[in-house]
Amino acid sequence: MVEGRVVVISALQFACSDDVSTNVDTAERLVRAAHQKGAKIILIQELFEGYYFCQAQREDFFRQAKPHKEHPTILRMQNLAKELGVVIPVSFFEEANNAHYNSVAVIDADGTDLGLYRKSHIPDGPGYQEKFYFNPGDTGFKVFQTKFAKIGVGICWDQWFPEVARAMVLQGAEILFYPTAIGSEPQDDGLDSRDHWRRVMQGHAGANLVPLVASNRIGKEIIQTEHGKSEITFYGNSFIAGPTGEIVATADDKEEAVLVAEFDLDKLKIKRSSWGVFRDRRPDLYKVLLTLDGSNISQ
Image 1 (tube, rainbow, N blue to C red):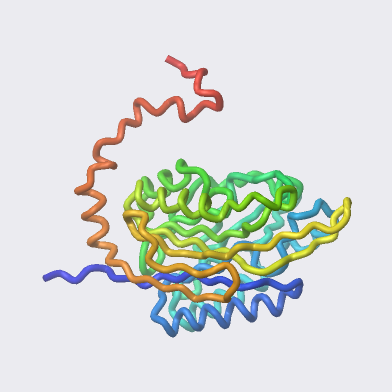
Image 2: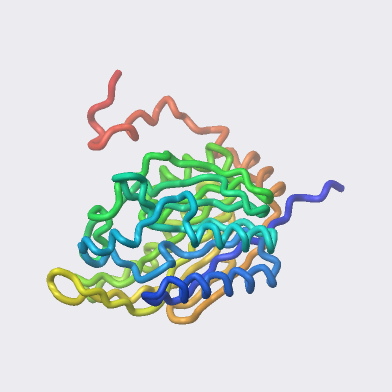
């Protein structure tokens, strides 16, 4: 009997401070803990080097952006990935000449930087004012061939769009990863998106028959804005979903966590083929998806 490609994947969850070195130390500690649990691909949360600064529109926060090349945190994670033999997608605030991106560098198990994905969907609302800082990503949706699997990486707001997940799986992604920073809504104390957030991604996993990993932060963060203080309590609940959308590992909304789950990628490949959702697709009928209002469809 031919052995399958069995891989253990991990989601990390922790509270961030406003000190870069402390946060990177925490990320490294948890990566090492995930490795001890057998993980081979380990996801750290979005923009983990500091507080989620997008609560405010402040010029001084642009000082946090750094170029991809020679980025100190990426270099450190390259060394860590090589030492442990693990894959690490690394989220960071990227400066590229006069452009700025919310980006992920995917580090392979030998420490090689496989390249960038730049966040495509940029939110703009109370507490999540990312359009002030980030250009829309220009990489398109990408798949990275790592030592252990072909992976697709979206970033936070990307996770609400089914087109992103489908585009990555169509390109061969076997596992989807979403580093995240999401929590309370400063303008509405009664709005809790946690369950909605989770169900949407469970749907992506189930619709595409692939595992999905979401890593979110925890803790209360207070940022001084131009209108006073803004506060978000990040709700964690990082999770790993299986290929039918089932939750196989989950964290709570308060505690640091290292989640792991194991999947046989060869078995899942056969399941995707036999289920028929990719066989029975009709791309010729999907032109409406190339429009904004659904009406301007060229004949």
